[in-house]
Each structure stands twice: as C-alpha cells, then as structure tokens.
Image (cartoon, rainbow, N blue to C red; front, side, top):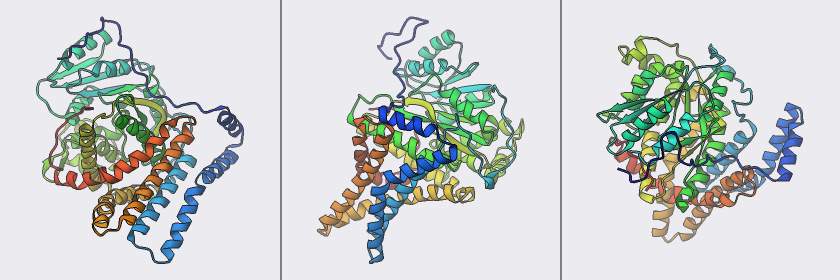
Amino acid sequence: MSTRAAPPRGTAPHPRSVPAPRRGGRARAGALRWAAGLEPGTRRGVVRLLVLLCLTPLTFLLANRSLALADGAGPAAVYGTAVLAATAALFYVAYTRYQDPAVADVPCPRRLRGTFPPLPAHPRVSLLLAVKDEEDRIEECVRSMASSDHPGIQIVVVDDASADGTGDILRRLGAELGITVVHLTENVGKKHALVRACALADGDIVVFTDSDCVLAPDAVGRCVAALVRHPHLGAVSGHCRALNTDASLLARIQDVWYEGQFRVAKAAEAAFGSVTCVSGPLAAFRRDAIWNYLPAWAEDRFLGAPFRFATDRQLTGYVLGQAWRGRRLKERHADSPFVADHDYPERPWLVGYVASARVGTDVPVGVRAFLRQQVRWKKSFVRNLCFTGGFMWRRGPGAAALYYGHVLWVLTAPVMAVRHLVWAPAQGLWLLTGLYLCGVLLKGCAWGMAYKADHPGDPRWRYRPLMSLLSSTVLAWLLPYSLATVRRGVWSRGTT
C-alpha cells in the first residue's frame, strides 16, 4: 500500500505535462510561413527538394557503398548498404508523404478502395483502460482521461484484481469523476480485461490507453477528428513521448528513440495507410473495425499456449488483415456476443498515425525493467509476424517493402551481432568490429539529425546514436531468447 498522501476529494495532483512539439527558431518559422504560402503542388516539390538536400550525406555514402559492392564486397557490406538505403528511403517517405489526418485530407489508395461508411459528425467515444497494481500512477492517468476536451466521453476502467491500493484509488475516482470502474476478483490478463471494458462500451469509436500514461487534453479529440474526416481509416495511433526523462540516462535515450519511432517510422507507414502497430498509449479504433475480432484477440493462442502479449500489434493486425482473414476469425468465435449480435462487413481498412495527438508515458528507468519490456515486445513481434506477415504483401508495394524490410532487419540483427562482436574478435579482425560499430553510430547519427531537424535547439538528439549502439550490441541478443521463451506470458509492468 502506498504511503503517499491522497489529495482531498475534488482536487487533482499536480500533473506532469505531456511533451509537446518544440518550437523552432525565427529562421525556421519564417521558412515555414513562406512554404505555407505556396500552392500545394509547389509546396510539396519544395519539401521534397529540402529533404533530398538533407539526405545528401547519406546519398553520397550510399553511392560509395554501391561502388564497393560492384567490386565484389562481402555480406557485411551488402547488409550495411541495405540498411543505409532503407534508412534514407524511410526518411524520404516520412518527410515528404506523411500528412496528419486530423488536419489534412489523406487520400485512400486506389487498390484498397472499398465501401467505408462515414462516422457521425459527433460520434460517441468510449475511452477504456485496464490496470493492475499501479497505485503510484493510476490517479494521474485517470484524471488525464477525464480531462479530455472531447465532449461526452464514456470512460471505463477495469481493475484486473490489483493486490495493492489501486482498487481503493479507483473507487474514490469513480465516485468523484463519474466514470465506470469494474473491479475483477480474479486476474484475467490485459486483453481479457479490456474486452470486459469493451462489453460496456457504447461508442462509435473505442480508444485505449495504458495505465502509466498521461493524455494531452486534445489527444482523444484529434484522433476522433482523423477518423471522422477519413472514413477509410479503421484505426489511428497517437504520438508518444516519455514523461520521466529526468529519472535516468536510459529514460532520456528512450524518449528520443520514441520520437523517431513515431515521427519517422509510423509516419512512413501511415503514408501507405498501413501502420502495423497502433500503440497502446493512445490507440483509437472504429467500433466496426474491431468489434467482431475482440474474442479472437482475447483468446489468441500461439504454439499451443495462450498468448498474453501483442495487445496492440495483434489488434492492429485484425484491422489491417480482416479483408483476407476476418471471415475465418469470426467463424471461430461465432457464438460470442461480439460476433453474433452484429456482424460487421470485412473491409480493407487503412490504419493511420496522428502526430498532433500527444500522450506521455513512463518508460523503464532501470536496465532490468527495460530488458523485460524489450523481451515482451520481441515476443509480440514474433507472434504478429506469423499473422500479419501472411497478408502484408497484399497491401501494396510500399507497405510491403516497409514491413518486410523491417522484419528482415530484425531477423538479421542477431546474426550481424554474432559475426561482428563474437566471431570477428575471435579471429583477430578488430577492424571489422570497429567498422561495424562505426556504421551503427552513423545510422544513429542520421536518426539524431532527423530529431534535430524537428526540434532545432534541442540538444537531446545526441542520445539517439546511443540507442542505436544499445540496440545492436545488447537488444539484438534478445530475439533468440524471446523465441526460446515465447510461450511464457506474464502481464507485468514497472520502470525499475
């Protein structure tokens, strides 16, 4: 039980602010105003030119590596050149093709066009949360949910048999804020708890968040605006940054990494309408895009055992792939009220990303908690690959290239780590190890420059190369371990 004194009823603790986009200097602001005054076609051309100029150093390096390949380079050089080319392509797509669907019109790709019924102009919204043993953070999270400026939100919180003071805090908040709180007497796991919340949800749009998150007041409204404005979007992800950056160097590294994973990686996927993971901190779904698949999500099994991870990746996969996998999934759970009460047509939904919908989350500050989180994520990656990997090729060449290119990079990372960090030193090839680490840092610097371009004057871009080094020297080894222990599943959070 926490010893922290509870605030008087009707008062909120001082909230931590959700990280907001930093403003650029006068020169950048003037350039943006100048570009905004151009015709749309001209403006797009100017943006593409500026991005190409920024990518010039990577382009020269890529050209040199290509010449080396022509002279007969080894597999390491091929891998390095491919990674460099993929990084440059990712930046180009993210910065030239992405548009925030909350404020701009995003066209539906022709090959995926179907019948997408529009949402009401003012849709009903259900904001859902499952929590277990989060007494230190739950009040801040729930108050941020209740502080949303979108009118008439239904809030449902499920306490999944917490053993600390979480239940008492939620009882007090339920009475004070007028939200629905469900207290489970037996732990059922996050997915089952969220499905319990969905059973009470009456929204046209269902929004999920995590118990260690703080939502910006306009975050939910911006996601709703994107879904209303674009009927072909079945789901959208918000933009997440770290809240607890003062806690440790590791937390600051993750914060800058999160910025790139959303602003660049998700933006590139969104340019093709195929964001493959609507992340848990802020995930908004149309009811008709997920409702029939909630039983399959809750009862998901992998290698003969219940799979308790992949909460966000797998649900996103059901939205992306229901045109090809949906009917079979519904037939397996035909007796569930989620399927029997209303059978929604399978549609080739697009999945987007709303950069202006901000949410902050507490990231792990200790090494052990960080590694546990990364193992959970890699297990989710493995499970989701066996589902989403079977149909992403149908969603167009751009979406397929991004997805399968990322899969190839993740799968080869352990091999490259063994070759350069174990085999090469054992053979006395220290130069090869040094070149590998230099390449890793080069890639990290490219991501750091992208952060610096978006946040001029912010010195935190320097942390990004450290994340690349950490990923290649430490996290790459976690994939084999995750594969070996993929059947183990425990819902556990924590930052230390």
